[in-house]
Length: 130
Image (tube, rainbow, N blue to C red; front, side, top):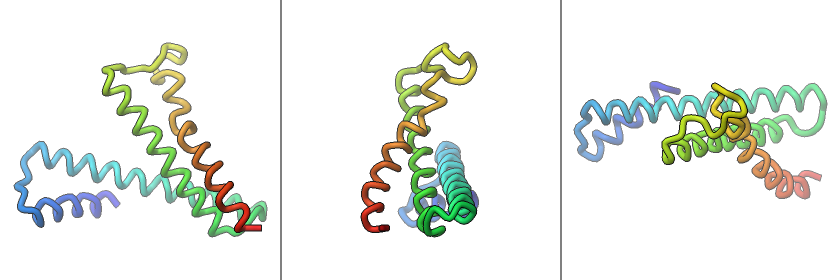
């Protein structure tokens, strides 16, 4: 996924006539890291959701895997958003409650995005599922 994302960034630059300098190369690598991490996290979440659905029989495996992938991806958006807020305000840790771990918000940033997303998905899908 990393090399594919890096290739997409380079193709975009070439297509639009941009010359890629050292800073832009660094940005392309950052984009590739972000895209591959997002893809890997969503794949892991889908696999875990499918495994739980298969072992417990709680619902259609593909539906649970898809919901798990969406929630896993949205959780990563929460993590990135929290990191952006910290950068914006020049803060390394949001609190000293858990020293060296970025604070309590760093422990729950993904949950703050994933939980409401899951609730909305369940409200939207549950009536159609039954």
